[in-house]
Length: 322
Image: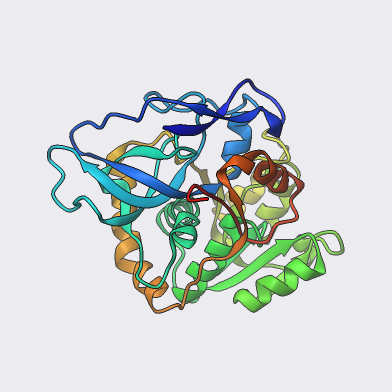
């Protein structure tokens, strides 16, 4: 099969087309003929040599989310059959014509969505569900602050939290991006280049943060009593100085997670929650995929350049059908 491989750690141009063996499948797995693969920031980190894949995932083929058609079914797989259209969260290897995945990490492609749209869902939707609703325990009527409102995570979090009855605040870097977030359903959008969100917001129940660094102290400041700070990345740095008395006085909960290395059972449980609570909202179009750009798979380097410049609104997707 053809795959997009990392020839060596480095800039986007290290992504090249190469021949690789089609993956074998184990019991409990399916083999998917990939039509589309989503681009995510962890793919960029892996390309640079800063995010090694977990054991069992290809070391040189990035890609954490795919959509396509099942072409092989392993032993002990009950639900899926050859020909089923699915999207899936994978631990790596998504930038390829074929990818193997545990059956429990697959979800059906809603009838109203294309493969391109479906490929934009798994990584961000699994991440948001796990961190906002499982770890953050966000409830209807509570407030959520999302940093990076126009990122893939941001557009998923805005729509999912609003659909579940919560109030959503976001930060973004331009007025255009702030306007887009409001159109998507956010209740308030703050241009962080013009305003400090900590001067504008207060009594936030859950903060979903991918920034870290000097945002951390401000996140604690805006949280309500019993509030939760949920960390999923540290783009501005992992070493921070905070006033721990704020944590004690407001009885705050600081938590976080990394999804990629979690086991199949954990990811399967998230998939089941998504199918129960979120997939009907995709089918009814109360939640919609937001696709910024689609690149042919041979242009993966260009897709990574777009991801790194931060100008995108929504998801970037590779198309393996062209």
